[in-house]
Length: 309
Image 1 (cartoon, one colour):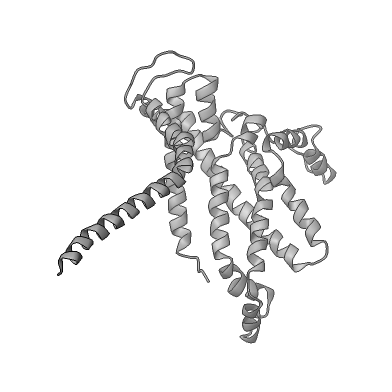
Image 2: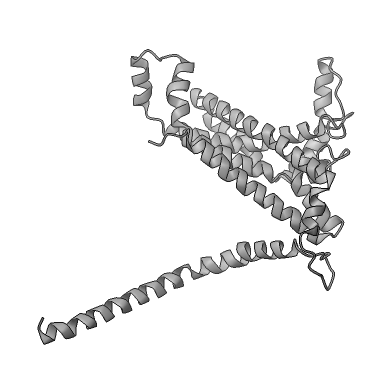
């Protein structure tokens, strides 16, 4: 190696290191606004909640002390918490299949009939645009035991209605039906988008193979091709169902006798009604752990049954 080459090699290495350092600096500078927002809006509050879950802090108190895992032990022995957890799981078990099934059926009907297609899409999407708090008031009036539209309609067919939101046997079911009503329009829009992406050649090929019936086309072509959309809709619907709060807070406040109590309403009551902020923070940590675990398990389970084109 010549003297000139031996001098130039370290110089080129130093220049490359400087370029890499400058590129890294520019990269960090570019992502720093998003990183700051993530820390301030997500990671920071999450860390604060975890910290408070190990304290006895009450909202408004100037001081607090660390009490270890006492909040979590109290949570384990709290019957209303287990009632809220069971009710939340039941609510999700009703809302997810109801929303996905009704959204898919509506999308298939709308796409099968070209007349007034745009009108039907808009009508079914309207519940998504309205706030749940406002619509809960409307549903509260409709489900009123004496003047409500639902019981009046049942009376026209000779059926005696019940006090839907004050009966232990129907309160959670009524809330779940409201949840399905609110969510199926969004699922319908996603399924309509998925249906438009299914190639017509697949239906033609299925017809050549003898699968020209509606159910055969649905089973062999439509449902497999809608796999990715279905996975997205199921995960999104389940996540939103776990977050049910507005309708419960406005219509039942978790009653009667905890029959419609759910995790987020329990969390709100402990944190802001009873001012037990440390206990509410422990409930929040458990709630987040359950949601993350179920979402990951759900995605892993459904992913195996989805075929991407």
